[in-house]
Length: 119
Image (cartoon, rainbow, N blue to C red; front, top):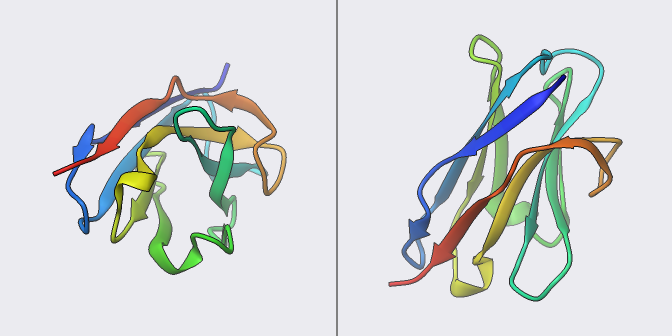
């Protein structure tokens, strides 16, 4: 059973960089799967942010590409999200997930972490 757990600050100030880490257990992030970050703003649907695949190659949503970076630490079986220059519109529940490709369809997902952007 694959388990994912998000961690990071719940409150970020505008213009700062949001950083979240996803710790994966029960499976290696270097196997043939897609590891993604997804978010859900209040009252809206799921939004795919980006993916790092088993080889370390990354893909990003065109609307967020200029502000998003996904990396990994294979020794810790973790992957991380950095979102720069945040605004209150980036307030959302952030999820890490093992997805079925580049998108929001997943087979395993973390419980999610609320991130609020506010001064």
